Length: 182
Image 1 (cartoon, rainbow, N blue to C red):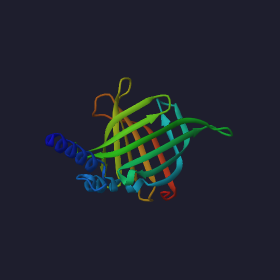
Image 2: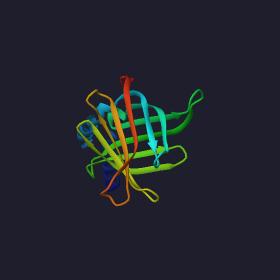
Image 3: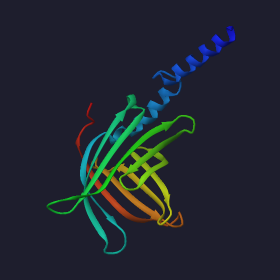
Image 4: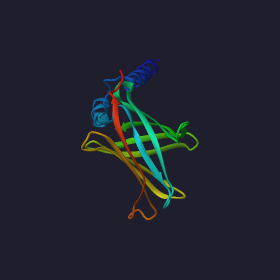
């Protein structure tokens, strides 16, 4: 009987410490996630997609980036519109970014309307974020977001069939229009 209570106490202690903000690993996770603070806020600007010579499509973009779960997750929501008087959505997506203490990697979970979900890793540097994936039709795809010298969000997208030669197909520049909303 004593063993049952001891086992129950150990299970409860383990479950409660895993969920608490002060649990081991949380301080390091928060420190790693602070590297992404440069993205926080609301952004607006324009860019283009280009899928072959003469097939460039321009768009306007808004991005809203917020901390969630006390800073353990970054929530990114973006929408791109194309067209003149009556713009139409060409891109609607959201991503969740977190730091995985066990693998020591940033996890990137992205969802795009009409395309399903993507679970991959991201690389974070000094005011930079890079993520990518393998596409069965285009090969390797990567996106790099960085702050440029004007403090703008500058993002490129590139594709490579061999992993060595990269071809840019996407570029976007956004201005911060509001800091992170609390």
